[in-house]
Image (tube, rainbow, N blue to C red):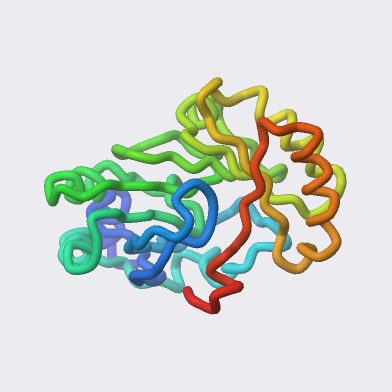
Length: 209
C-alpha cells in the first residue's frame, strides 16, 4: 500500500470498505428497522462459522475516503450500522464524527475485542470465544448478542452476561447452520431464564442483505 494511503488509513481518514447497502436490520433490538450498513474489511477474530469470511482480509478491500462513505450514507437513512469484519480494528473517530455532523444515528456491531474509538448511539456487543471483549466494551454494551452454535455456548453466554451493565438487553441467536438443532434448546433456556430473549437472522428468512 502507498505510504500516503497507509497514513490515511492509520488515521481513520480512509477505511477498507468492503460494501455498503441500504436494507432492514435483521437481528437483535432494532430488527425490522431500515438502516444503511457500512461493512469495514479486516478481522482476526476467526470464527469458524462466520458468514462473511470474505471480510477478513482488509487488503482485499479498497481504502475509501470517509468523505465518500458519509456522502453515500446521507442519501439513504438516518440510521447507520457499522459492522465488519471487526470495525474497531480501525480508528472510528473520524468516520463517526463526520456521520454525527451529518445528523445521523450511528450503531455498531462488534466483538468488542479492541479498544473503543468513535461515537456510538447504539453498541451491539457480539462476543467471541477466540478473542474476548475488553472490559470497556462490555460496560458500554446496549445489547449483548451471543451466537449459539453448541450447548457450551449457553455457559459462555452466562459468563458474558455477568460482564455487561444491568440495563444491557440480552439476546441468544442461533448460528444459522445449527438453527434447527439449537432452537428447541434456546426456547427451553429462555423459558427458564426469561432475562434473555431470542434473536433470529430475519434477513435470511426474508432473503434480503
